[in-house]
Length: 158
Image (cartoon, rainbow, N blue to C red; front, side, top):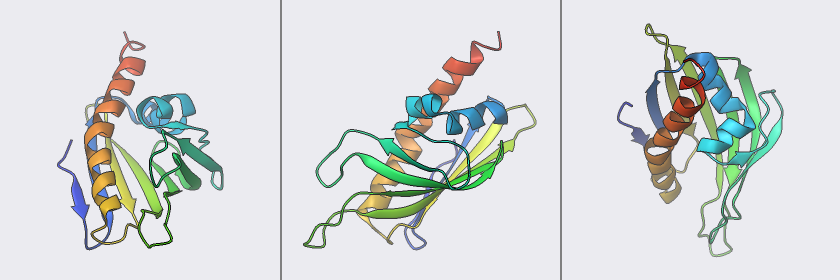
């Protein structure tokens, strides 16, 4: 994985992951609810433009545990874009309400694997949400997706 880049001025998180699995396998990990849920959160995604879906996780103070999404772009095996909305804005102005965009780009590598690029954009500059989400996307998530892909697809190819 390339070192993550969190751009506070432009309010985005960017990360790249070099995966041994092919783009069609990585695409499945991004678009099939069971596989996506194994490394991110329970969900009801369908890779169809306009499809509304949700991610569900453990609620915590200031967040009900639900991320509301809508599929915005689909280029099978190449690009997936969806909105990412959640959190809460408290009456006192605190809280972390998000209205952002997640873009996944898949590029085949010469070795038959995939370079997976993430851009999560639309954060308030310098926000705590930008920092927290940046740590999640570039740390724990990278490990989880790698394990799910290896478990699911490495055994199938032997």
